[in-house]
Length: 350
Image (cartoon, rainbow, N blue to C red; front, side, top):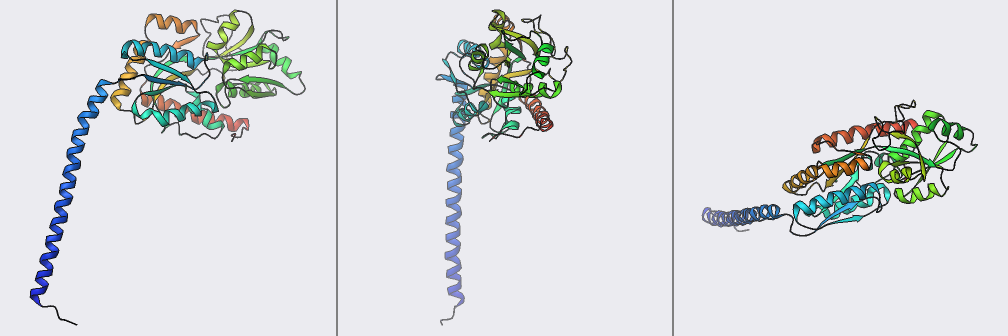
C-alpha cells in the first residue's frame, strides 16, 4: 500500500475545498434564483388579487333549487354581480347533508372563483350525526353571516290536529309512533324532531330528504304527517293554506307568522336556538379576496330592499361577526350537538 505524503494530502484537501466552494456557490446561486422568482411572483399575485374578479364566479349551494340556501345565494349573486361586475353562477349540489357541495369548494375554491352558501348546521350538526369526508374547521372558512333564521314545524292540513298539544296527543295514540320529515339527515330539522320526541315522550321516526321541496311535496300528499322545515320554503304554503304551522324554533315569534307560537311558549325552551346562513371560502383563498367578498356580502344584505325581502322570507339579517367569532359559535354548537345526540342515544350513520 502506497503511503500518503504531506504534499499529496495537501493536494487532496485543496481539491475537496474547491469542490465544497463550488457546491456552496451553486447553492447560493440556486437560492438567489428562487428568491428572485419569488419576488417576481409576489407582485404578480398581488396584481391578480387586486384585479379580482376577472371571470365568472361560482356560488355553490348544498340544497336543491328553490330551497333556502338557493334563495339566499341568488340574493347574494345579485349584489356580487352589481358590485364586482362579473357574472355569478349559482350551482346546486344537494346530497350527503352538504358534503357534496363542500367537496366542490375543497376542490375548486382555492383560486377565489368558487364559494359556498350553506347553513351553520351542516358544519356543526351533520358531522356529529354521520361520518363526513370533511373537517368543518379546516376545510372551509366562514366569511360573512348572511341571515339568522328559525325552523317551523308544519303538518298536513287534513290531519285531525291544529296545534302542537293536539299533535302530541295524536302521536301518543299511534301505536307505532309518527313519521316526521326533514330536509337533510343530521341537520337541525332532523334533530329538532328527535328532541321533541324525547321531551314530549312520543315516538318520532325520522324520514330524511334531499332538500325541502321534495319533503314538502310528500307532506302535502299525506306520505308524512309533519315536518321540521326552514321558514323560507314553508312560508308560501302556510299562507296559502296548503300546510299548517304548529310552532316555530326561534327565540321569539316571527313577523311573518305572528299567530304561530314558539316552542318556548308551549313549554319546550330547548327548541329555540336560531340557525344562520353564511358565505364560505376555501381556507387558502387569498385574504384580500376573502375580505372583498365579505365586505360586498355584508353591505348587500344591509340594503333596505334586501332587508324587506329577508323579512318576507321569515328571516332576520345576519350579524357582522368575524371569521373567528363565527368559528367559535360553530365549535360551541358542535359540542352541544354531540351532547344532544348522546342523550338521545343516536349513533352516527355511515
